Length: 361
Image (cartoon, rainbow, N blue to C red; front, side, top):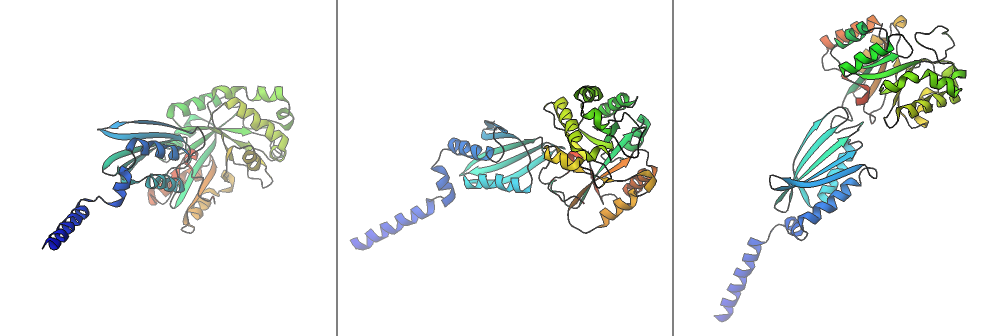
C-alpha cells in the first residue's frame, strides 16, 4: 500500500508540473530581464542601417516599454524582413503592425509580446527613397517631369490635372525667380532645367552654359550665382548634345552644384534625348541619385503613345520618368483624358517618391 501511495503522490506531482509549466518560448524569455532584451534588440536593429544613421529612445507607453528607433535610410520589403527577423531572434512575438507613410518618411509601430509582457517598437524612417509596402511598387509607376515652365499660367494649368508632378524651371530666364517662388509657395518639387551648349541651339530659352565657361571656375560661379537662394531638389539638362559629350565640363558643373547645395541631396534627371549623352553615367559615378527620363517633345507628338504603351505592357512591376515640355498641349490633354477614363491604371508620383528598387522602362 505504501508503494502505491508513493507512486500516486509522484504521479500527482508530475501532473502539477505539466499543468503549471509555461510554454517554451515565454520560459526562455523570462530568463533575460526585458530591459536587457530591449537593449540587445535595439543594438541589432540599428545595425541594419549605416553607422550613426539611427537614434533610439526607450520610454513607457501606457505602462509598457516603448523603444523608438529613428533611422535615415530605406525600408523596403527586404529591410522589413530583416527588421522582423531581429525581433523574432530576441523572442519578441509580433501582435500587430501599423504604419503611416509620407513621400520620404514613414512611421511603423510594432506591438510585441516578450513572455507575457507587452513591448512596443516604433520605427521612424526618414530621408527614404523606398518605404514598405508602397515601394517596391506593385504595377506601373509614372513620374511626370514637366520642364521648361515659361509662366505661372503653365504651372497652374498643369496642377489642375490633380496628379503629383515634378517641375523644372529653366535657369537664366527673366521670370525664373518668380516661377520658382510660386512653386515653393505651392509646396511643389523644384528642379532647375539647365540650358547647356548644344549642337543645334545657338539662342537658348534661358542662359546657355558653354563648355569653355564650365571649365572656367570664375565664369561657372557667375553662371550659378542665383542657385544659392533657389533651394532646388535637383537639376536636368534642357539642351545638352555638345556639352553632354564633354565629361570634364560635366564634372565641373556637377561638382560646383554639389558645393552650392551643401548637405542637401541633389537628384539628377537625364532628360537629354541624345544617345551619346554622358549626363546619366557621370552623375552616377559622382554618387548623385540619378534617373534617366523618357524624353518626349511637342513636335514629335509622342507623349501619349509612349505613356499608353508603358501602361499597357506586361504585368511586371516597373517605373518610368517621362520628361514633357510644359507647352505640350497634347500631353496635357492625354493625362487629363487618362485620369478621367482610366482612374487607377497608373500610380502617378513625384520624382522624390520613385522606387529605386523597381526596374525602369
